[in-house]
Each structure stands twice: as C-alpha cells, then as structure tokens.
Length: 123
Image 1 (cartoon, rainbow, N blue to C red):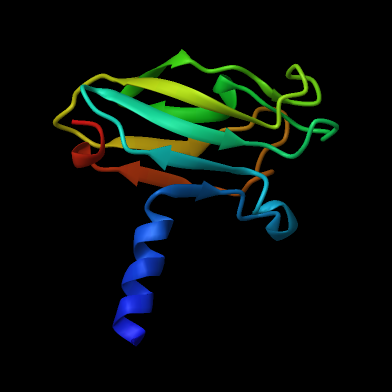
Image 2: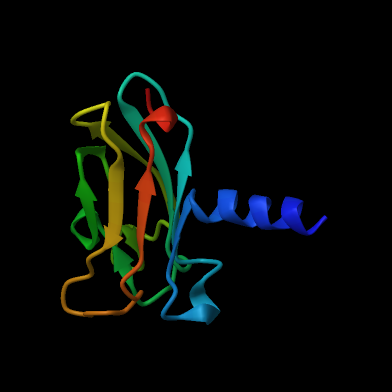
C-alpha cells in the first residue's frame, strides 16, 4: 500500500508545477501538463480567480526547449480568466521541456519551483 501511494504521489508531482511559496494558493496557482503529441505540449494554467490580484502571463513562466504558441494572460488584469489552455511548441522532441516560475516584479512569489517534462509526454 505504501509503495502504491508513494508512486502515485511521485507521478502527480511530475505533472504539476505548484505555487509552493504560497500554500494557501496551491490549489489555484499551478500549471498542469496534459498529454500531447507531435511536438506540441498542452498546459492547463490556473491562476487565482476572476478578481484575483495577480496576473499570470507567458513571461512569468520560463520555458526551456519550447515556445508559447497560444499563451494568454490570466487573472484580474488578464481579461478576468482564471484558467486557460496554453500550447507549447517543443523545439527538440528528443529532449525534455523544463517549466519554471519566473515572475518579474514579484521575485519569489511562487518560489523556485520547476518541472521537467520527459519527451514521452509530447512525442
């Protein structure tokens, strides 16, 4: 039972980039990877609510080995959208994609979290 739970938690953590520095916002401030194909990676980006004080935009997420194709700002300033599906074009499908928090002006707001997505997810 313990092995199963540990494996399940590890699998979950590999698919989500949490806002770890603000535990109260962990459920609403996160990036969830979705299985994708043909060099395209889909991310569900969640950021507070329609009246939340923060805006999450493409420049707030550092992406290694990929570029945003459809990444709209979220939050109170970002057209009142609490969540959006972002599409990332993978540069080299043989290498992993790394996502990391990079929030200008609010250094460390979500901590120093990063997520490495293996090629099997987007091949």
